[in-house]
Image (cartoon, rainbow, N blue to C red; front, side, top):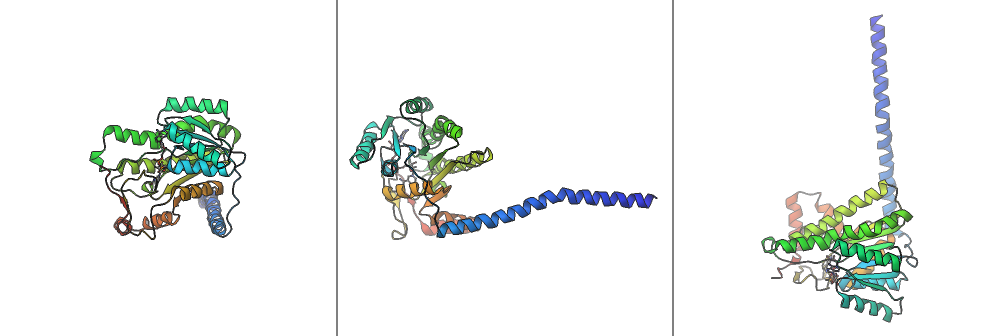
Length: 318
Ligand SMILES: NC(=O)c1ccc[n+]([C@@H]2O[C@H](COP(=O)([O-])OP(=O)(O)OC[C@H]3O[C@@H](n4cnc5c(N)ncnc54)[C@H](O)[C@@H]3O)[C@@H](O)[C@H]2O)c1
């Protein structure tokens, strides 16, 4: 009798264990199918690119629009038919960008002078934008600075300024514009990181930290939006190699034919293309992300050697 009861008990525990493990097996099989599906989709999309998101109904805000990549981004978005809002701390530069857009025969952009590192200023100017223009649907966090010298030569004030402009400013513009995007479940957030946010670069220790931070918060934000079913708010983080805007003061490049300084107009075109294609993260040029992902699989010493082989970077600006 006891043996029979014992056998029944064992049978029940076995059944229970199988029942416990079934959902895990189900999840795992589902994961394998998803891995296969999304890999196939990525390969397919390399051959047949996705159709580009239209821009005509969009209201694009570009920070740091008074010079360099920001200026070219504003010109590109305006030429594609979007309504454009230009923000810069430099009023003159901003007005010059606006003039270039109008001279191109595009809609007159809206210009605002704003220090993006100042939360109060950002929220005030954002309220003006909402009253005078409307809800921003594409936010491009582009403004940035790049002091370039050895770590011990960076002052406390400078390090704080790098973080304030390159990272914290993004949180203030998100605070201002994300709620409307959420209310409409529609929008796109674009953030400028850098190749210095993919690999650490000497003479750019605080800058690299700020650009890694941009990639980090953008990844977390993307997941948070998806978790909360804001599936029509897209994100794109861009990591360009060095660009010929003057920001990068003393660049050096080993293989000039293969990897030379990029032109801001080309970079802006690639950024708009990435945003309209819904790409979550890319480097410019594209292959640098693949090279980085691959070398990170190898030992740290090998990764270091690959980095040394490319030998590009910046000299101190002091
Ligand atoms: N130039 C490069 O080599 C390079 C490479 C990778 C990434 N990036 C990133 O691209 C972005 C644009 O760089 P860029 O080369 O066009 O720089 P840039 O210096 O040519 O232009 C930056 C613009 O931002 C504005 N700005 C600076 N501080 C501001 C503030 N507090 N509030 C509002 N506006 C402010 C400036 O007035 C300027 O008009 C930056 O985030 C930079 O880190 C640049």
